[in-house]
Length: 360
Image (cartoon, rainbow, N blue to C red; front, top):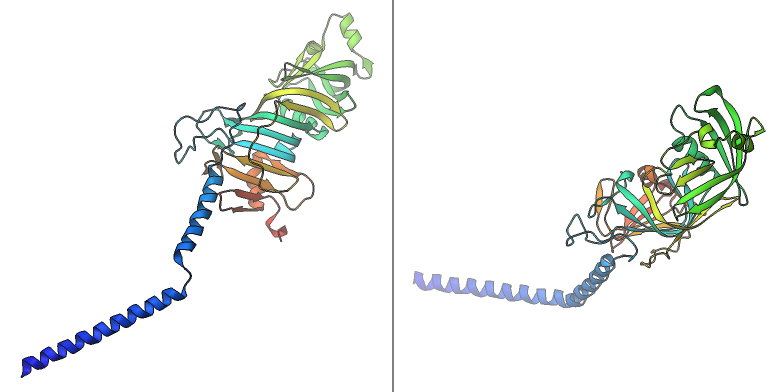
């Protein structure tokens, strides 16, 4: 009697469990039916992911630029040509007031060791290889270039120079000591001359008149068989007095990084020295913005803030100004830290130099 009772109870328990399982399955089916189909959602996500991957994989590889990094793409080397930077209406400063206003410019940032990333914290580690564009070196940059960089040594013959560009002429004034020493005080001097381009690299300044303490000097020196370089020697790598001319070397006249490129024209205007470069700019993907003033970097590998960005896509703007943005290469960290940085789905880093408090 007991055994049949136990068997009947076990059978009843099984029926209850089976009923509960069927009810749970039915409820789950109803819940799934009420939700949107998963397949279309997954398909849309895959499509969006494919799009951003295609955007990220775009390469800017100008044929006139530097060769690609060697070897296949790996985590620390995307295997692409060095980064290409496109600037438009930018006050580009290397450090302090030394730099130039960029009207429009296309260049490559080329590391000295192929395959290495461009280290923004080590300007001496890479070159700026200019592919095309036009820049103006204004008066304040010319003054800063000579007084804080080229003449930053002692003893020296020239001091506190003021360079005033005009229409086709350049006036230079300051202090002079003969042969770096005599007479022990700075004598007032001035020059006026013209600028010419030589070998697509050198800027040659030729004085048409020179005065020391108001006395015309060129004819006097010629009569004595002397030249300006004997009166006031200057040889600082990027700037050299050679006879009666001053020669500026494009690649080394500015602080690092070196500027490499073929100048096709140079002229003096009241706004400054206008330098034009060729050949034509590289054709790359357009900047993802309609901002009139911008820096757009793509392809290659960049190291910023000790963070490595492979196959870079970096856009720099400044929404706090309607004029040109000012970018100081040696102090980019401070400027970026004051602003805001965000990332798009395709990996583009958008850096807004506007102080964060000013962003609406």
